[in-house]
Amino acid sequence: MEICPFVRLLDWRTLRAADCLTARQSREVDRFAIEELGISSLVLMENAARSVCDWISQYDQASSGGETSFVVRIVCGRGNNGGDGFAIARLLWTMGYAVEIFATHPEAEFSPDARANAALARKLGIPWRELQEFGEAAASAQAKDWIVDAILGTGQSRPLSGVLAELVQGMNASASRRLAVDLPTGFSADAGPVSGNRLIDQPHELAGLCVRADVTITFVTPKMGMLHPGAREYLGETFVASIGLPEKLLREAVSLQ
Ligand SMILES: NC(=O)C1=CN([C@@H]2O[C@H](COP(=O)(O)OP(=O)(O)OC[C@H]3O[C@@H](n4cnc5c(N)ncnc54)[C@H](OP(=O)(O)O)[C@@H]3O)[C@@H](O)[C@H]2O)[C@@H](O)CC1
Ligand SMILES: [K+]
Image 1: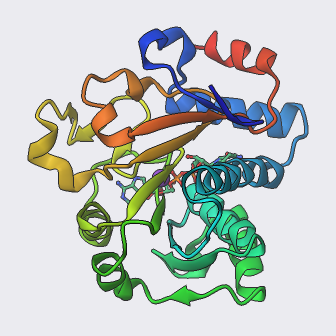
Image 2 (image 1 turned 135 degrees about the horizontal axis):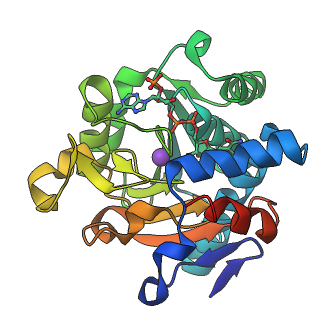
């Protein structure tokens, strides 16, 4: 089912390993596109952000006739997943949505593309709130609001702890709807909802350590961790967004499997 031109609903019944990429293959696809084809990483990031915004506005149109009285709270990590979040904030802001940015790190620690999009968001004067205000904001959020999880994507390599674990628990406890950018934070691209080095086989026991998204919009292809039996509890309704990379490239990357 095509929701928007570049976003399609993932069909769980037909999902196979051959359709999925690991985190390493995802990075290889991005590297190949950037270094061999010359597509800039900022263009890939913009395409990724645009697909999330298209989905939100289509969903808003379909579910409430486009009354945009809800608030979109975007929590941005310091890597390119966070960079997607800053770009999403900018695009939604230009579409007239009420947007609030929360950043997990100081700007000096951002990846180059995240820093570029954060600077744009600053220049536009998009409301940028203190991270420590997020718990209260999430607790008082309404059901029609959105929390966009742009903390960690395919770069996550270890269980959550400290501030990020607290943020994720605040997200999961909120009445707000949750949309995960690329992957829910706490969800491994390779193994699914992971704690330590083992798969979570009783998801409820460690739910605080992984965002339970209502919607996940993943880029380019499904990820190997989505095959995990407990995955859907965290991914919610899952969509795959094209970010402008040719199919041929994906087949070459998947052949690295
Ligand atoms: N051109 C492209 O590449 C495109 C990529 N795109 C987007 O980029 C995303 C991948 O970005 P990314 O590689 O920067 O990693 P990301 O997931 O942001 O993590 C950031 C850093 O966090 C750290 N970290 C890891 N685990 C952690 C933990 N448990 N707790 C705390 N910190 C932890 C780890 O750094 P470390 O601490 O290991 O040095 C990691 O480097 C991808 O999901 C998609 O959204 C799209 O824009 C399309 C184009
Ligand atoms: K995420």
